[in-house]
Length: 267
Image (cartoon, rainbow, N blue to C red; front, side):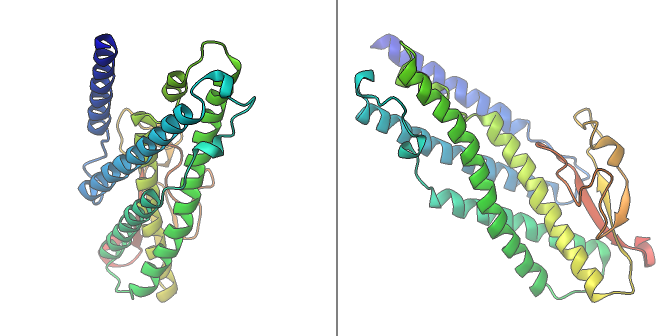
């Protein structure tokens, strides 16, 4: 019993250290617009994902122990959907975080360009985009998780000696994966807000050329995909080389865009 408790304490301590290290590594370029704001939202999203996964882990563990106290009780295939539940709390938190991020991108774009626009339509467009995208994001996260969990359940049923504990240890609910999701999606929502604002400006001022420019962190983590894009400028409705409208270019992308016009001091 004491050995089991010591093992649990070590696992908790290791998880706490990994969590702390992951949070420290969530760095962004200090020259990036609204960097502290984005970092706060990034950490909020990271914690929201981890809480969501903790609730899912607890449900899976409890139900496996309740329904399959021995492997003799296990069916030939355990459907993962029987162990899964929707998480409205997580859905609401994701929507709030991404909307705050997108609205920050709209504000940054309008301040940079210096053209006054009616915020109503861009803000509504951002809310519409967030509602749809948050649904797709959560669905994608869940589907990836379910595939891994189903494989673990298959091993639980089919492999002698594979335990419920082994299933729990195989769950894809790591801080590293949560960090990658948080970094990527905060990059995406902020850039989407800038794009929405830039398109609104182009529509309201049709005689003014509105452009967007790609920026990287210019550090050792910048990848071969993003490095050539640094400083590249295209029209607001044009795509960057590689066929992208805005960051992220890949998972864990930390790039951003700036929106500007070809008039006055912004040229």
